[in-house]
Length: 343
Figure: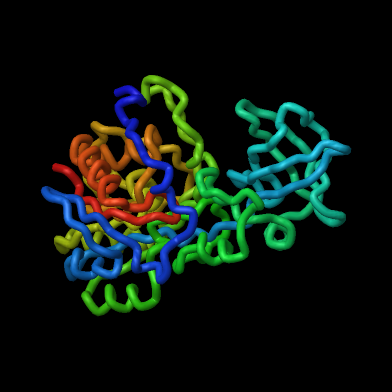
């Protein structure tokens, strides 16, 4: 298929710049054999007792940094951890940096350019490592909001909480698993009361999730690898629910991509601790996930390709046409959908 097959017209006024409050008041489009309009607070009634939600407990770090190499101002966005003190980053202006250069972010925080790669990507070794590096990021960095969220003066103070899910625990993501942004303690209590289980996995979302698909043929696109963990106890619980006839409900495409990376052809989910660069497009045979909760995605994006594979190409085109006509809000701070897997 061609990238152009996944294009659609999106009015700019439907791009959400701030979330609704409370979080579970966002709209939810239920997509199955028919379309129906709800709000996120209705989720317990849309799921069944015995279903198991799989959430991503990654925590977004303040991954955007501003520094200087001599008189040259440098912006760096961390996107993949390569070691305790080493990250791959997207840098601007990347072309003016050379291997061996030192970038000064603060008096007590610098980095050395270790490697240069295509597309403005460089590898930095920081002057702090491990927990000390995260401390420096929290002191000097900013939340790495997606480029489509208008913030001319940078992230707002509210974004520190708004762009973090209620599940956030394991530091390492540079983008939020945005389906999880809709959950509140009250909604979780209602799901518990309904008999809907919950288990956590971790996929540290990278900034590559924002990169456009630049090739004409989708088979030529290459995904950035991300680090994921499916603990043994999570895998065992997922397999037990499936064996008992329950459904696996992925909260977000990040959890789905991780589960599909960890699943055998028969759907058995194995413990997993590795990188994944899985790219899911129409024709993919899903192994582990039955229901997907996910926000509304960009035209021509890998995520719109994924949901088209999951729920059906024409069904998703119809769903997005309905969402646009009905004024649903798109992208990270927008509304959400609940998709049933197409047979």
